Image (cartoon, rainbow, N blue to C red):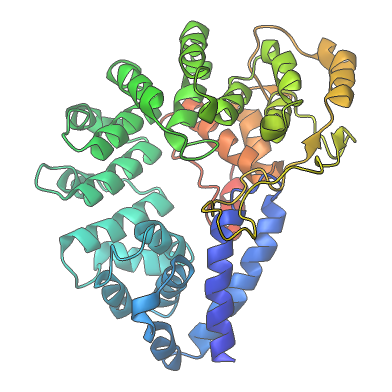
Length: 416
Protein backbone atom coordinates (compact mmCIF):
# COMPACT_ATOMS: atom_id res chain seq x y z
CA UNK A 1 0.00 0.00 0.00
CA UNK A 2 2.86 2.39 0.83
CA UNK A 3 4.42 1.77 -2.57
CA UNK A 4 1.08 2.50 -4.24
CA UNK A 5 0.65 5.78 -2.36
CA UNK A 6 4.16 6.86 -3.40
CA UNK A 7 3.74 5.92 -7.05
CA UNK A 8 0.27 7.46 -7.41
CA UNK A 9 1.17 10.61 -5.51
CA UNK A 10 4.22 11.35 -7.69
CA UNK A 11 2.30 10.53 -10.88
CA UNK A 12 -0.53 12.88 -9.87
CA UNK A 13 1.90 15.70 -9.16
CA UNK A 14 3.56 15.11 -12.53
CA UNK A 15 0.23 15.07 -14.39
CA UNK A 16 -1.00 18.10 -12.49
CA UNK A 17 1.75 20.34 -13.91
CA UNK A 18 0.25 19.80 -17.36
CA UNK A 19 -3.42 19.69 -16.42
CA UNK A 20 -3.30 22.87 -14.36
CA UNK A 21 -2.98 24.87 -17.60
CA UNK A 22 -5.45 22.84 -19.61
CA UNK A 23 -7.96 24.95 -21.55
CA UNK A 24 -10.78 22.59 -20.49
CA UNK A 25 -9.89 22.13 -16.80
CA UNK A 26 -12.20 23.93 -14.36
CA UNK A 27 -11.41 24.72 -10.74
CA UNK A 28 -13.98 22.09 -9.70
CA UNK A 29 -12.24 19.44 -11.84
CA UNK A 30 -8.87 20.52 -10.43
CA UNK A 31 -10.31 20.13 -6.92
CA UNK A 32 -11.26 16.52 -7.69
CA UNK A 33 -7.73 15.82 -8.93
CA UNK A 34 -6.28 17.46 -5.84
CA UNK A 35 -8.49 15.39 -3.53
CA UNK A 36 -6.83 12.28 -4.94
CA UNK A 37 -3.38 13.79 -4.41
CA UNK A 38 -4.34 14.75 -0.85
CA UNK A 39 -5.50 11.22 -0.10
CA UNK A 40 -2.20 9.69 -1.24
CA UNK A 41 -0.22 12.32 0.66
CA UNK A 42 -2.17 11.47 3.81
CA UNK A 43 -1.40 7.80 3.19
CA UNK A 44 2.32 8.59 3.11
CA UNK A 45 2.11 10.68 6.29
CA UNK A 46 0.27 7.89 8.12
CA UNK A 47 3.02 5.48 7.06
CA UNK A 48 5.77 7.77 8.40
CA UNK A 49 8.61 7.20 9.17
CA UNK A 50 8.68 4.11 6.95
CA UNK A 51 7.63 6.31 4.01
CA UNK A 52 10.85 8.33 4.20
CA UNK A 53 13.04 5.40 3.15
CA UNK A 54 10.77 4.66 0.19
CA UNK A 55 10.71 8.30 -0.97
CA UNK A 56 14.50 8.69 -0.83
CA UNK A 57 15.73 5.37 -2.20
CA UNK A 58 15.87 6.43 -5.88
CA UNK A 59 17.84 9.62 -5.34
CA UNK A 60 19.63 9.32 -8.67
CA UNK A 61 16.43 9.03 -10.72
CA UNK A 62 14.04 11.59 -9.24
CA UNK A 63 11.58 13.21 -11.64
CA UNK A 64 9.58 16.42 -11.16
CA UNK A 65 6.53 14.68 -9.73
CA UNK A 66 8.61 12.80 -7.16
CA UNK A 67 10.38 16.00 -6.09
CA UNK A 68 7.01 17.69 -5.51
CA UNK A 69 5.72 14.68 -3.57
CA UNK A 70 8.80 14.60 -1.33
CA UNK A 71 8.59 18.34 -0.61
CA UNK A 72 4.88 18.05 0.22
CA UNK A 73 5.45 15.00 2.44
CA UNK A 74 8.37 16.69 4.23
CA UNK A 75 6.22 19.62 5.29
CA UNK A 76 3.08 17.58 5.98
CA UNK A 77 5.04 15.28 8.30
CA UNK A 78 7.26 18.03 9.82
CA UNK A 79 10.36 16.39 8.35
CA UNK A 80 12.40 19.46 7.43
CA UNK A 81 15.46 17.20 7.27
CA UNK A 82 14.03 15.81 4.03
CA UNK A 83 14.12 19.33 2.58
CA UNK A 84 17.82 19.36 3.48
CA UNK A 85 18.14 16.05 1.66
CA UNK A 86 16.43 17.51 -1.40
CA UNK A 87 18.74 20.53 -1.25
CA UNK A 88 21.74 18.28 -1.68
CA UNK A 89 20.56 17.42 -5.19
CA UNK A 90 19.16 20.77 -6.28
CA UNK A 91 19.83 21.67 -9.87
CA UNK A 92 20.07 18.06 -11.07
CA UNK A 93 16.60 18.08 -12.63
CA UNK A 94 15.16 20.69 -15.02
CA UNK A 95 12.36 22.56 -13.28
CA UNK A 96 13.73 21.66 -9.85
CA UNK A 97 12.64 24.81 -8.00
CA UNK A 98 9.23 24.81 -9.64
CA UNK A 99 8.74 21.20 -8.55
CA UNK A 100 9.73 22.00 -4.96
CA UNK A 101 7.36 24.98 -5.03
CA UNK A 102 4.51 22.74 -6.23
CA UNK A 103 5.10 20.52 -3.21
CA UNK A 104 5.49 23.36 -0.70
CA UNK A 105 2.03 24.61 -1.70
CA UNK A 106 0.45 21.57 0.00
CA UNK A 107 1.80 22.43 3.44
CA UNK A 108 -0.27 23.75 6.33
CA UNK A 109 0.02 27.38 7.40
CA UNK A 110 1.79 26.20 10.55
CA UNK A 111 4.40 24.30 8.55
CA UNK A 112 4.95 27.25 6.22
CA UNK A 113 5.43 29.51 9.22
CA UNK A 114 8.06 27.12 10.55
CA UNK A 115 10.01 27.42 7.29
CA UNK A 116 9.99 31.21 7.50
CA UNK A 117 11.10 31.33 11.14
CA UNK A 118 13.60 28.49 11.29
CA UNK A 119 14.24 27.43 7.71
CA UNK A 120 16.41 24.42 7.02
CA UNK A 121 20.02 23.66 7.84
CA UNK A 122 21.41 24.07 4.35
CA UNK A 123 23.35 27.11 3.17
CA UNK A 124 21.86 30.44 2.14
CA UNK A 125 20.85 29.79 -1.51
CA UNK A 126 18.60 26.85 -0.68
CA UNK A 127 17.26 28.35 2.54
CA UNK A 128 16.56 31.68 0.84
CA UNK A 129 14.77 30.15 -2.15
CA UNK A 130 12.66 27.98 0.13
CA UNK A 131 11.61 31.03 2.16
CA UNK A 132 10.88 32.94 -1.05
CA UNK A 133 8.61 30.11 -2.20
CA UNK A 134 6.71 30.39 1.08
CA UNK A 135 6.41 34.19 0.72
CA UNK A 136 5.07 33.75 -2.79
CA UNK A 137 2.51 31.22 -1.61
CA UNK A 138 1.32 33.13 1.46
CA UNK A 139 1.57 36.68 0.10
CA UNK A 140 3.93 37.77 2.86
CA UNK A 141 6.37 40.55 1.95
CA UNK A 142 9.62 39.87 3.86
CA UNK A 143 11.54 43.02 2.95
CA UNK A 144 14.81 42.12 4.70
CA UNK A 145 14.83 38.75 2.97
CA UNK A 146 14.10 40.37 -0.38
CA UNK A 147 16.90 42.91 0.02
CA UNK A 148 19.43 40.24 0.91
CA UNK A 149 18.34 38.12 -2.06
CA UNK A 150 18.67 41.02 -4.50
CA UNK A 151 22.10 42.25 -3.45
CA UNK A 152 25.04 41.91 -5.83
CA UNK A 153 26.47 38.96 -3.89
CA UNK A 154 23.36 36.80 -4.26
CA UNK A 155 23.48 33.99 -6.81
CA UNK A 156 21.44 34.37 -10.04
CA UNK A 157 18.94 31.59 -9.08
CA UNK A 158 18.21 33.41 -5.81
CA UNK A 159 17.89 36.77 -7.56
CA UNK A 160 15.58 35.26 -10.17
CA UNK A 161 13.25 33.71 -7.62
CA UNK A 162 13.23 36.89 -5.52
CA UNK A 163 12.40 39.10 -8.52
CA UNK A 164 9.56 36.77 -9.41
CA UNK A 165 8.16 36.99 -5.87
CA UNK A 166 8.65 40.76 -5.67
CA UNK A 167 6.75 41.20 -8.94
CA UNK A 168 3.92 38.85 -8.04
CA UNK A 169 3.45 40.40 -4.59
CA UNK A 170 3.62 43.98 -5.90
CA UNK A 171 6.47 45.19 -3.69
CA UNK A 172 6.90 48.54 -5.44
CA UNK A 173 9.31 49.76 -2.74
CA UNK A 174 11.96 47.62 -4.47
CA UNK A 175 11.41 49.20 -7.90
CA UNK A 176 14.69 51.17 -7.72
CA UNK A 177 16.62 47.94 -7.18
CA UNK A 178 14.73 46.30 -10.06
CA UNK A 179 15.74 49.21 -12.31
CA UNK A 180 19.37 48.56 -11.40
CA UNK A 181 19.02 44.84 -12.10
CA UNK A 182 17.64 45.48 -15.58
CA UNK A 183 21.25 46.37 -16.40
CA UNK A 184 22.50 43.01 -15.08
CA UNK A 185 24.89 41.12 -17.35
CA UNK A 186 22.79 38.02 -16.70
CA UNK A 187 19.98 38.16 -19.30
CA UNK A 188 17.60 36.07 -17.19
CA UNK A 189 17.99 38.40 -14.21
CA UNK A 190 17.58 41.43 -16.48
CA UNK A 191 14.39 40.03 -18.03
CA UNK A 192 12.88 39.08 -14.67
CA UNK A 193 13.66 42.53 -13.27
CA UNK A 194 11.83 44.12 -16.21
CA UNK A 195 8.83 41.84 -15.63
CA UNK A 196 8.78 42.65 -11.90
CA UNK A 197 8.64 46.37 -12.73
CA UNK A 198 5.93 45.79 -15.34
CA UNK A 199 3.82 43.86 -12.84
CA UNK A 200 4.16 46.68 -10.33
CA UNK A 201 2.60 49.12 -12.80
CA UNK A 202 5.81 50.93 -13.76
CA UNK A 203 5.65 51.90 -17.46
CA UNK A 204 8.85 53.89 -17.94
CA UNK A 205 12.03 51.80 -17.87
CA UNK A 206 10.08 48.56 -18.08
CA UNK A 207 8.25 49.49 -21.30
CA UNK A 208 11.35 49.52 -23.49
CA UNK A 209 12.85 46.52 -21.69
CA UNK A 210 9.71 44.42 -22.08
CA UNK A 211 9.36 45.43 -25.73
CA UNK A 212 12.91 44.27 -26.46
CA UNK A 213 12.29 41.03 -24.57
CA UNK A 214 9.09 40.38 -26.52
CA UNK A 215 10.73 41.05 -29.87
CA UNK A 216 13.68 38.75 -29.41
CA UNK A 217 11.78 35.94 -27.67
CA UNK A 218 11.44 32.64 -29.44
CA UNK A 219 8.25 30.67 -29.25
CA UNK A 220 8.87 28.71 -26.07
CA UNK A 221 5.18 28.00 -25.89
CA UNK A 222 1.87 29.18 -27.34
CA UNK A 223 1.75 31.83 -24.66
CA UNK A 224 5.02 32.60 -22.91
CA UNK A 225 4.67 34.46 -19.61
CA UNK A 226 6.61 37.59 -20.51
CA UNK A 227 4.78 38.03 -23.80
CA UNK A 228 1.36 37.59 -22.20
CA UNK A 229 2.15 40.11 -19.46
CA UNK A 230 3.47 42.58 -22.04
CA UNK A 231 0.49 42.33 -24.39
CA UNK A 232 -2.08 42.43 -21.60
CA UNK A 233 -0.30 45.43 -20.07
CA UNK A 234 -0.37 47.35 -23.35
CA UNK A 235 -4.02 46.45 -23.86
CA UNK A 236 -4.79 47.55 -20.31
CA UNK A 237 -3.20 50.92 -21.05
CA UNK A 238 -5.06 51.05 -24.39
CA UNK A 239 -1.70 51.49 -26.11
CA UNK A 240 -3.09 50.23 -29.41
CA UNK A 241 -0.45 51.95 -31.57
CA UNK A 242 2.26 50.05 -29.71
CA UNK A 243 0.30 46.81 -30.07
CA UNK A 244 -0.05 47.25 -33.82
CA UNK A 245 3.68 47.90 -34.08
CA UNK A 246 4.53 44.75 -32.08
CA UNK A 247 2.17 42.59 -34.16
CA UNK A 248 3.56 44.02 -37.41
CA UNK A 249 7.09 43.17 -36.29
CA UNK A 250 6.28 39.55 -35.49
CA UNK A 251 3.78 38.77 -38.23
CA UNK A 252 6.77 38.13 -40.50
CA UNK A 253 7.77 35.07 -38.45
CA UNK A 254 5.67 32.00 -39.28
CA UNK A 255 6.92 30.18 -36.17
CA UNK A 256 5.10 32.67 -33.95
CA UNK A 257 1.74 32.78 -35.76
CA UNK A 258 -0.14 30.65 -33.18
CA UNK A 259 1.48 32.63 -30.38
CA UNK A 260 0.46 35.94 -31.95
CA UNK A 261 -3.09 34.70 -32.50
CA UNK A 262 -3.29 34.03 -28.77
CA UNK A 263 -2.01 37.53 -28.08
CA UNK A 264 -4.68 38.92 -30.40
CA UNK A 265 -7.21 37.23 -28.13
CA UNK A 266 -5.61 38.93 -25.15
CA UNK A 267 -5.98 42.37 -26.78
CA UNK A 268 -9.74 41.84 -26.67
CA UNK A 269 -10.74 44.12 -29.55
CA UNK A 270 -13.77 43.19 -31.66
CA UNK A 271 -11.87 44.50 -34.69
CA UNK A 272 -9.79 41.30 -34.47
CA UNK A 273 -12.74 38.90 -34.48
CA UNK A 274 -13.06 38.58 -38.26
CA UNK A 275 -9.31 37.90 -38.49
CA UNK A 276 -9.67 35.14 -35.90
CA UNK A 277 -12.52 33.58 -37.88
CA UNK A 278 -10.37 33.66 -41.02
CA UNK A 279 -7.49 31.94 -39.20
CA UNK A 280 -9.85 29.07 -38.34
CA UNK A 281 -9.50 27.84 -41.93
CA UNK A 282 -5.81 27.02 -41.38
CA UNK A 283 -5.54 23.66 -39.59
CA UNK A 284 -2.25 24.41 -37.83
CA UNK A 285 -3.62 27.47 -36.06
CA UNK A 286 -7.38 26.85 -36.18
CA UNK A 287 -7.78 25.84 -32.54
CA UNK A 288 -5.64 28.76 -31.34
CA UNK A 289 -7.87 31.06 -33.38
CA UNK A 290 -10.96 29.48 -31.86
CA UNK A 291 -9.62 30.03 -28.37
CA UNK A 292 -8.76 33.67 -29.18
CA UNK A 293 -12.36 34.10 -30.39
CA UNK A 294 -13.62 32.67 -27.09
CA UNK A 295 -11.34 34.95 -25.06
CA UNK A 296 -12.84 37.98 -26.77
CA UNK A 297 -16.49 36.97 -27.05
CA UNK A 298 -16.91 34.43 -24.24
CA UNK A 299 -18.54 31.98 -26.68
CA UNK A 300 -17.90 28.35 -25.72
CA UNK A 301 -17.51 26.72 -29.13
CA UNK A 302 -18.27 23.18 -27.99
CA UNK A 303 -21.21 24.13 -25.81
CA UNK A 304 -22.76 26.24 -28.58
CA UNK A 305 -22.19 23.61 -31.25
CA UNK A 306 -19.75 25.82 -33.17
CA UNK A 307 -17.12 23.08 -33.45
CA UNK A 308 -16.38 20.37 -36.01
CA UNK A 309 -14.47 17.12 -36.31
CA UNK A 310 -10.67 17.32 -36.60
CA UNK A 311 -9.22 17.11 -40.13
CA UNK A 312 -8.51 13.48 -41.00
CA UNK A 313 -4.91 14.07 -42.01
CA UNK A 314 -3.95 16.36 -39.13
CA UNK A 315 -1.27 15.24 -36.66
CA UNK A 316 0.23 17.13 -33.75
CA UNK A 317 2.30 16.39 -30.69
CA UNK A 318 4.29 13.16 -30.12
CA UNK A 319 3.60 10.25 -32.45
CA UNK A 320 4.76 6.67 -32.97
CA UNK A 321 7.35 7.55 -35.64
CA UNK A 322 10.80 6.60 -34.21
CA UNK A 323 12.44 9.05 -36.63
CA UNK A 324 10.38 12.01 -35.36
CA UNK A 325 12.39 13.86 -32.70
CA UNK A 326 9.44 16.00 -31.59
CA UNK A 327 8.31 15.08 -28.07
CA UNK A 328 6.42 18.27 -27.21
CA UNK A 329 2.84 17.91 -26.05
CA UNK A 330 0.13 19.52 -28.14
CA UNK A 331 -0.88 22.64 -26.17
CA UNK A 332 -4.22 22.72 -28.00
CA UNK A 333 -5.06 19.04 -27.50
CA UNK A 334 -8.12 19.78 -25.34
CA UNK A 335 -9.44 22.62 -27.49
CA UNK A 336 -12.40 22.17 -29.86
CA UNK A 337 -11.92 22.49 -33.60
CA UNK A 338 -13.91 25.58 -34.68
CA UNK A 339 -16.23 25.50 -37.66
CA UNK A 340 -15.53 28.84 -39.43
CA UNK A 341 -18.96 28.96 -41.10
CA UNK A 342 -20.88 28.34 -37.87
CA UNK A 343 -18.69 30.74 -35.93
CA UNK A 344 -19.12 33.47 -38.56
CA UNK A 345 -22.89 32.99 -38.41
CA UNK A 346 -22.87 33.24 -34.60
CA UNK A 347 -20.80 36.43 -34.78
CA UNK A 348 -23.14 37.97 -37.35
CA UNK A 349 -26.09 37.37 -35.00
CA UNK A 350 -24.33 38.53 -31.82
CA UNK A 351 -21.89 41.28 -32.82
CA UNK A 352 -24.45 43.96 -31.91
CA UNK A 353 -23.70 43.10 -28.25
CA UNK A 354 -20.11 44.32 -28.62
CA UNK A 355 -18.83 47.87 -29.03
CA UNK A 356 -15.81 48.91 -31.07
CA UNK A 357 -12.98 50.31 -28.96
CA UNK A 358 -13.97 48.41 -25.81
CA UNK A 359 -11.54 45.80 -24.52
CA UNK A 360 -13.35 42.49 -23.94
CA UNK A 361 -12.39 39.35 -22.09
CA UNK A 362 -14.74 36.38 -22.04
CA UNK A 363 -17.55 38.49 -23.46
CA UNK A 364 -17.37 41.35 -20.94
CA UNK A 365 -15.33 44.54 -20.52
CA UNK A 366 -12.25 43.97 -18.37
CA UNK A 367 -13.08 44.99 -14.79
CA UNK A 368 -12.03 43.81 -11.34
CA UNK A 369 -15.43 42.25 -10.77
CA UNK A 370 -15.42 40.39 -14.07
CA UNK A 371 -11.88 39.07 -13.53
CA UNK A 372 -12.90 37.69 -10.14
CA UNK A 373 -15.96 36.11 -11.78
CA UNK A 374 -13.73 34.34 -14.34
CA UNK A 375 -11.40 33.21 -11.55
CA UNK A 376 -14.39 31.57 -9.89
CA UNK A 377 -16.09 30.09 -12.96
CA UNK A 378 -13.64 29.91 -15.87
CA UNK A 379 -11.38 27.21 -17.22
CA UNK A 380 -7.75 27.13 -16.13
CA UNK A 381 -6.18 28.92 -19.11
CA UNK A 382 -8.85 31.61 -18.88
CA UNK A 383 -8.27 31.90 -15.15
CA UNK A 384 -4.55 32.57 -15.63
CA UNK A 385 -5.46 35.44 -17.97
CA UNK A 386 -7.98 36.79 -15.46
CA UNK A 387 -5.34 36.66 -12.72
CA UNK A 388 -2.93 38.70 -14.84
CA UNK A 389 -5.61 41.27 -15.67
CA UNK A 390 -6.56 41.56 -12.02
CA UNK A 391 -2.91 42.18 -11.14
CA UNK A 392 -2.61 44.83 -13.86
CA UNK A 393 -5.79 46.53 -12.64
CA UNK A 394 -4.57 46.47 -9.03
CA UNK A 395 -0.74 46.24 -9.06
CA UNK A 396 -0.55 46.30 -5.27
CA UNK A 397 -2.63 43.12 -5.04
CA UNK A 398 -0.67 39.82 -4.97
CA UNK A 399 -1.03 37.80 -8.15
CA UNK A 400 -3.71 35.14 -7.72
CA UNK A 401 -2.03 31.74 -7.98
CA UNK A 402 -4.16 29.61 -10.31
CA UNK A 403 -1.70 26.73 -9.97
CA UNK A 404 -2.05 26.42 -6.19
CA UNK A 405 -3.97 23.50 -4.70
CA UNK A 406 -7.68 23.97 -5.33
CA UNK A 407 -8.49 24.15 -1.63
CA UNK A 408 -6.12 27.12 -1.26
CA UNK A 409 -7.67 28.86 -4.23
CA UNK A 410 -11.21 28.26 -3.04
CA UNK A 411 -10.39 29.72 0.39
CA UNK A 412 -9.01 32.88 -1.22
CA UNK A 413 -11.91 33.21 -3.65
CA UNK A 414 -14.39 32.96 -0.79
CA UNK A 415 -12.91 36.22 0.54
CA UNK A 416 -13.04 38.07 -2.79
